[in-house]
Image (tube, rainbow, N blue to C red):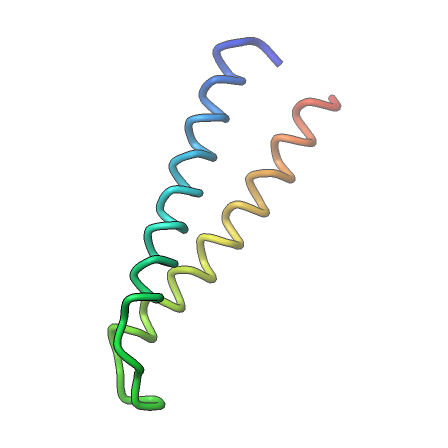
Length: 68
């Protein structure tokens, strides 16, 4: 993989990981939710799950590109 693409991949992954960490911190600071009633908390959990999936897919893509 060329240096420019490698840097771009590193930047993209760092951005996704930073957002995931930001959400994890917000979840940790969030007051205890009332089950199924806290829409904001539920959205944070959903976004955290989406980011985890995106990071996994991104890592798989980078692995494919670097082995090709």
